[in-house]
Image (cartoon, rainbow, N blue to C red; front, side):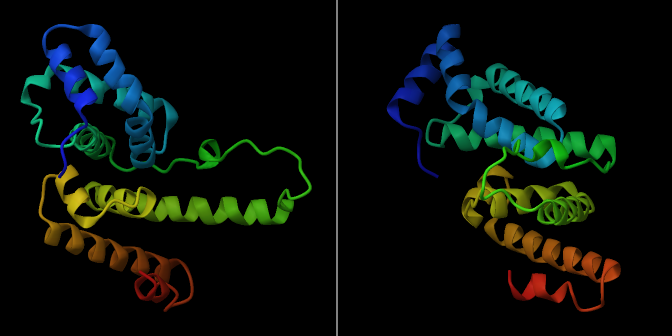
Length: 197
C-alpha cells in the first residue's frame, strides 16, 4: 500500500506534537470518505455520523500507532470499517429504509416516471435487505468492492486479512445473495448474480 502524501504526513506529525489544527485538517480531508463508508455499512445517517466521529476519535487516540509506510486513508477506513462491523454485530441486523439515502428529486423534463421511481425504491430496498442478511465481514467486503471499487489487495488491507480471504468472502457473499434471491423469487433467478459477478 502506498504511503500518504507529504502534506498528510506533516499533519500527522504536527498532530502527534499536540497541534489540534493539524488533526482538524486530517478530519476535514477525510470526513466524506469515512462518513460514506460508515453510511454504506450502517444504512442510517445518525448512526453513520456517530460512527464517523468515533472513528476519528479512535484515530486521534491511536495516532502514535499509525505507520507512515501505509496510506493514512486506508488506516482510517480500517478503523471505521472495524467499528461499523462491531456495531452491526451488537445491533443484530435490523432492516432499515433506503428512502433517506436517495437524493432529493427535483422536477425536470428528464425526471423518471413515478412508476420507475417506485420500482427503483423497491429494488433498492430488496438489495438492502439482502445485504443485511450477510455477516458483517462479508457485507464490508461487498460494500468496499462494489460501492467503492477497491481492489482485493486494498480491501484486504482495510479489513486486515489476506487477498485470498477477501476473494473467498466475496464469492461466498455472492452465493448467499443468490440463494436469498432464489428463495424470494423464481428459482434460478439468483444464478444471474453469480454469472454476472
